[in-house]
Every structure is written in C-alpha cells, then in structure tokens.
Image 1: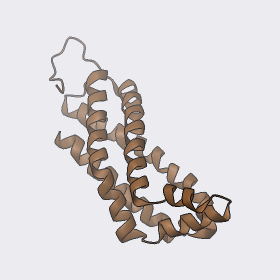
Image 2 (image 1 turned 180 degrees about the vertical axis):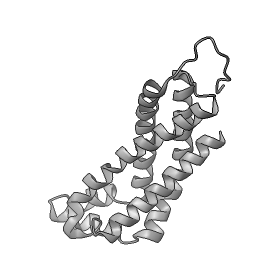
Image 3 (image 1 turned 60 degrees about the vertical axis):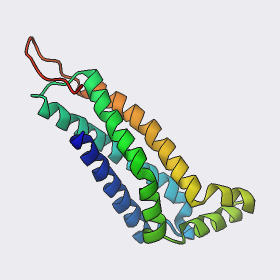
Length: 164
C-alpha cells in the first residue's frame, strides 16, 4: 500500500502544479476561461500515464509479473487514496493558488447567459470537491481497468507473490 499511497500523493502534487501552471498562463482568467475546461481535461492523459507507472512499479516489485486482478487492485487503491486527498487538493487550489477562481468563473458564466443562481451553484468549493471525488472515482476505475489489461504479465510456471 506504500506504493499506491506514494503514487496518489505524486498525482495530487502534479495536479496542483498543473493548476498553478494554468493560473500563471492565464487559463483561469475571464478572457481564457472557456479554454480552461479543455486544458484541465488534458490532465487526464497525464493521469492515465501515472496510473500506468504505478501499476508497472507494482509489477516490478512482484518480479516482473502481475495478474489483471492485482493490477486492477493496485489502480483502485491509488484511486481510493486520491479520493481521500481530493478535498485537500481543492482547498489548496482555492485558498492558496487561486482564491478568485470561482468569482471569475461565475462572472464568465453569467456573461454567457447562465443565471446567477445556477452559476453560483456550479462554481463553489463544495461543488468542486464533490465533482473532484466523482471524477477521481470514474477516471480511476477506467484507468485501473485499462492499466490492468495493458500491463498484465502472468509467469510461465514460476512462483510469484500476488498483491493480496
């Protein structure tokens, strides 16, 4: 479980660095807010790569072999740790990286014809924490399954110690 927790922390730090980079590049400002959603989704490609690295590291620790089940469980453990870290990540983003993010996004939404109540419901810390948890669960499940299929390697009549 140390491996999985380590990778969840790495993924959380990479997310915060990614969001900080987007802030400094201006993607969280009113004039580029429409592009923010697209650029943030590019993070998921990077996240998938990190899932593959986490599963591959587990495989190396098991003498180069891993079953689909063990690979999937590795990915799920990373996902569970990421879900636990999600509220902290969103709080760090809002309070330390970009405290006016929600105000900017609300004003952009209102300019695009969304009512103020709907915009305030969509862009607040609670909503982002909730969506971060859900997205981590969904993406983590999909990435764990894909990683298990891609990285499975079963030994030929050799003994190895499975994850569980």
